[in-house]
Each structure stands twice: as structure tokens, then as C-alpha cells.
Image (cartoon, rainbow, N blue to C red; front, top):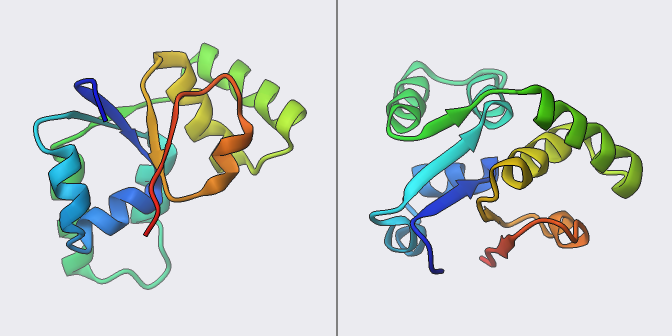
Length: 123
């Protein structure tokens, strides 16, 4: 993967936190971005242990968290209407599109979104 920036889907962040060495190598020296929705998904997991919260927050401190902007909200609406994707996926895709940063995900649903630079991670 060329380029110095990469946007991570929630699943990729979780794989990385779980010790995926392939991802660690791929993302080494890249600027990592994550949508605010991924932050909420990771920290909002029911029954999450305190140790896991600490690990996630440490990871998030090393990334750039992108908040919702009017452009991202508008693109999210368009994606939901046109591609019929779930709201969290639409927000993550809209965030990647609005910043023109490739999205790395194991979720193949993003293949359908033509205007996005998508990198599919296969386990």
C-alpha cells in the first residue's frame, strides 16, 4: 500500500490491537486516521474490561480521530441512500471519501462504494 496516510475501519483497529503483525508491518510509519464512529464502537462495547479501555485509549492517542463535519454528514446521507449501507459503515466511508484517504477494512461491503479508495484486508 503506497501513500503515507491510511484510514482504518473498526475491525482493522481491533485486529491491530489483537496483535496482528501483518497489519502492524503494513501500517508502520503511516499516519493513521480513524472515524469518530470507530472510536465510539470500540469504547462502547458492552462489558468492556478496564484494561481493554486503557489499551484502546492508548491506541486512539496515536491516531487522528476525525469528527463529523457537515461534508461528512452530507456524504453519509448520500451513501445511505445510494448504497443502502448501515449508518456506521456509511459514516466511516464518508469520512474516508471526504478526506481522500484510503480505507483499510476487512468488511467487503465497502467494495460497492465506487467513489472510495478501498483496500480490502483478507484474514
